[in-house]
Image (cartoon, rainbow, N blue to C red; front, side):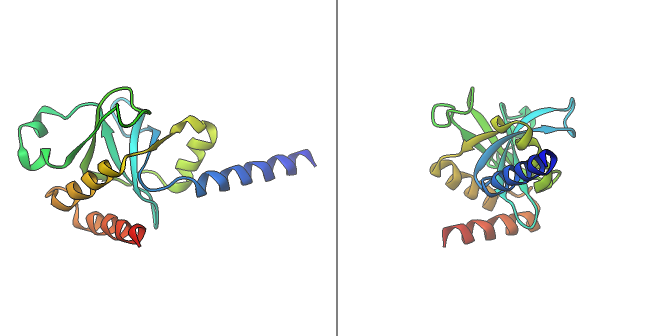
Amino acid sequence: MKAQQKNFMKTQQEKYIRENILPWQVLRLFCHFTTPPKNKHVLTVSLYPRPLLLMVNSQIHPYIKNRAYLKSCQVLLRASEHLFLAHDSYVDCRNVCTTFSLNDIVAQVHADRQRIKGFISDEAQTQVIAAIKVCPALEKQYKNLILAEVAELEV
């Protein structure tokens, strides 16, 4: 009976986590694809049909800084406005991370609830949307999916 109860509790906890991972949240996920693999902040911009995440970086790479058309794809998140950040950071709107399934995210959060950091401000959301719209490097399919999700959220 205890095993059934434990499985039920795990299922309920995972259901709760799944229902509380939302667009515009910053999560800290372990990324196997980075060199070296490490925990990174990511911004959820869409969850269905699969999670679309944008990487949050502590700095803008010099290559991007020197190219205005790429720099326009970076959005500043001020630590003073986002208390879960230790320092100012940047949302990179050039590439969408599709590496994680919702199950992957739920498993990481289930193992450590501190992985859910918080929501970005309304102003930052507006800036991310604007950056996505003008970013020449972002694939059109992802741009369309994200902007459709945003339009749906505004209704």
